[in-house]
Length: 432
Image 1 (spheres, rainbow, N blue to C red):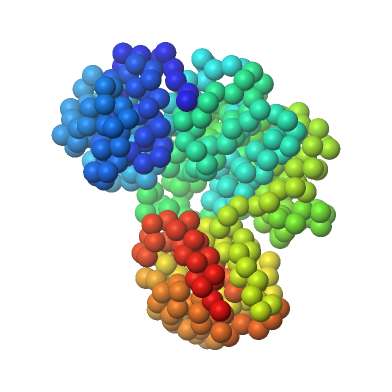
Image 2: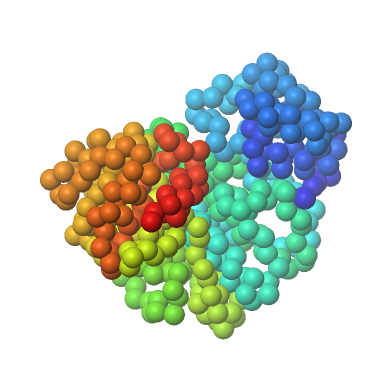
């Protein structure tokens, strides 16, 4: 794990004891910090006590007086725009931070290394995993973490010359004060998570903070497909050669990259190429990495082909903008969508409508989306995912695709998008 002498003898409160929170407690305790931890889930509290009984006190953070604390650490899932812990920390003059900020603090004590930070509304996970894969292909010591993979504090420190590749959500950036990435990447900004922000401009500003934390001689790579991203790039124009803009309209030969098809993946690949070039990776290793990349689970993942029908799990498409690429990538689609809507509109998906044979809606947004699509294509409100899979499989013919690309969050019926994708796979496997 990653530890720091900076935390020895200091006092921290930790709210949220899932994967990143548990790793945070472990790292702080191992560093000699005094830790007070809480989670509404009793099983998580018990697990922390079981493994760290001598170094952590279980205490409800609502009841704690933060005066004299050195930091209040919250999970990215805690809505700090409305949770009382944020106001309490401010009133006590104590920084409200996350595990990425602790990693930033620990960097000075680690062997010499570089950090790549990737943010954006869509494409973060694929681009992060692709950069990591290319580095591994090139033999560069590397770790992947942040919003993907294992919590970064739970990873072993890299040897000298290593690269930490971090996927960073806006929530994580909100809780980070001093992460100076050697390479920072912005892929796009479209409306998302607006329940956590005072409007779209505030959400875009959260993404921009990744670059505000950077030294001006470090590299910024920004796709300027959308107006907010282009505005951030313009604000960094003084960086000169340390600013790379990825503009729309570029052409790339993706024929040798089986898991990187479609225009959105051309954008992701170009961002990854620019990052790896900035890190000094050779072109041969970059080419090998692009060709051998296998993609991510739950992101345009073919889970089966039955009776000539392809079944594709795109559960990670949690908003209309992230569902649009899958609709563009396949023909003759039986589209399963719905869940907890982040937007009342599906306009971002409209370019893919000609590819759709029929739609099957599920979840909280199911009836709303059914009415929305009724004049556009054959559509059935199925309510549940297993029913939608069964109906789509019955209707689909050889050569067609049954696509789960929900354009919604999963939390109405599933724990997370991964559980939803797993349920889709199970429903497909159960088909005759």
